[in-house]
Image (cartoon, rainbow over the protein chains, first blue to last red):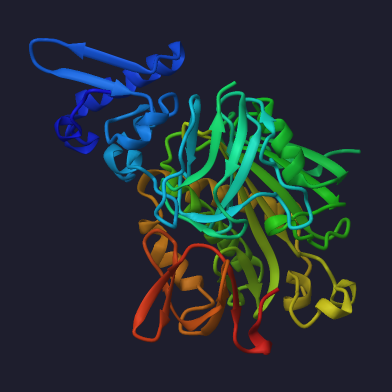
Length: 177
Length: 268
């Protein structure tokens, strides 16, 4: 991907109208399964790359689709969210083609099962359908069940059961079929 | 079987308690409400059961749920505009509503043990469980807010091994309460606190939470993932996290089991 991250601006520095536009475009990209979108008019040039389609997006700080919700509330700007999301030991997992990372949407405790005596929600190698629960992140006794966005294979689970996870930390490597 | 809670159904879809499903016996109200929510039940839909066979506490811990004495309810919420960073404190906002409700039936005895236990006279009289369903595009689909309150459980009904740390409105005050009345009060208070939280987050609710915070100034130990940590509780911050003074530093605790370092005061 020929691009210079230096020219990419974090979402938080964009005017609100642009943020809304990025969000709308992100929705479109998701809807049509586009990996990349480039727009140019007299005023500016805009390029969006979807992190979850492009494994390579792990290296980019450009606004991806998952950046859209960052525009609301007090979440960190997209650039932070998209940042390489290195594993706790500092090593970013190597991704094969069609593979992507599932980032943690929040800080909390990572659980693989909904109860201590219950089997894990997913195992490595499982194929999950859209909407299937993948894991639970607990924060202040709010149990947040994280669902699969689309059919995928669980390639690797990157976090330990009961361990603390940070915002944006990769939880799993998933693979599109 | 008639639904005694039908009398307090109020308002339109979206208002807490607009529709109340009532069951004699359920696996758990969380489970039943989860199925309703997945099928599109509107915000404010409530599931109440007289008894739960698999009442769930945090992480699937079982919750002692005998029939006809207590209130077991799960409320379906759809806080679609809420940022994920604000979701966790929603259960604390709900805790305030529960405390305010019990305050009417057991004045002066109510406290909240961070994050989600309700105490009467320093024993556990109830708890909250909150489950959020989050899609990976980070959209919040719905939240299941479960409340279990010991109301008309007599001291003798409480299993002996739990008696030192569990109580009920009846056991704490000697007075029975009208369970439907408690539910009515609870849904109204939840509605208020839920709207306030949606509007201005937890920050505006923090002073009220502080009033009920049972742990403030207490020495506690926190077990979260790895090593237990000991320290003094300073209170909660504007996001609802527990502030623990450990030596010269202050830790923000987001998850974990907190126990007061004195058997007398320990919660369940």
